[in-house]
Image (cartoon, rainbow, N blue to C red):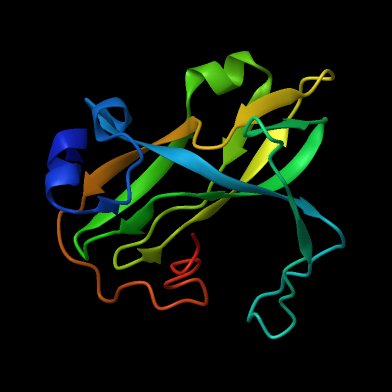
Length: 167
């Protein structure tokens, strides 16, 4: 069953909203842009994570007007909101249609039961002219799905409680 945005908000699944009246949607909650990072080297992925290496990144600052212009390419983004997925739910993130209409999209992984953190995603700019984003722009919507039964375990991975202490 999909949980409404208002119910998810009342349950405290998403904290630190910039503007609840704008971010709470009928079928989910929109997340806003905290920061943008460019990749400065490569990463490595394997089966067991023995050789896993996440690439180094460098923050791209917002200008004096609170905006950043991004050229075509891939960027890591961090959201303002802190997500706390209950053990009987998952969340899926979808880009806002306005972002798609500007020639960009966001790729995400699944938000697992028990995950807590200020999430990161991949922003991909396809528009050859780039895109301008303002700090706190609403860019993605999370939808929350209640599981039929609780899973045998909850999220315990490396990214648990990631970016919690960001400003």
